[in-house]
Length: 116
Image (spheres, rainbow, N blue to C red):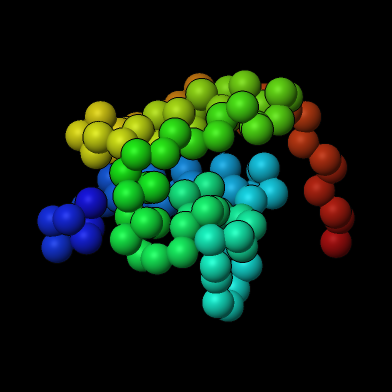
C-alpha cells in the first residue's frame, strides 16, 4: 500500500503487526542478510528473490493460517482481520485492542507478582 500510494497509512502498521505476530508463532522469521528465492522465512518473502516479487506476494499470497497453533483460535481469528488485503476492511488500532482475544488473554490466571 505504501509503495503503491507513496503514502503511509496507520492500517498498514496493523497489517505489519499481523505479519510479525504470525511469523513469530509459526517460526517463519526472515533471517538477516542477503536472500535468494530459496532462503526460508517470511510469510510473504519466502520463495521471492526480488523486491518486485515480494510486493506481488504480499498483495496476492494468502497468509498460512493453517500453520497457526491449534491452541490459539482467538488469535488466529484476530490475525485474519489484521492481514486482510484491503486496507479499508482492516481494523484500526483501537478496534484491534477491543478484540475479544484480549479478553481471553486477560482472563488467564496471572502469576504472583514478586514481592520486594
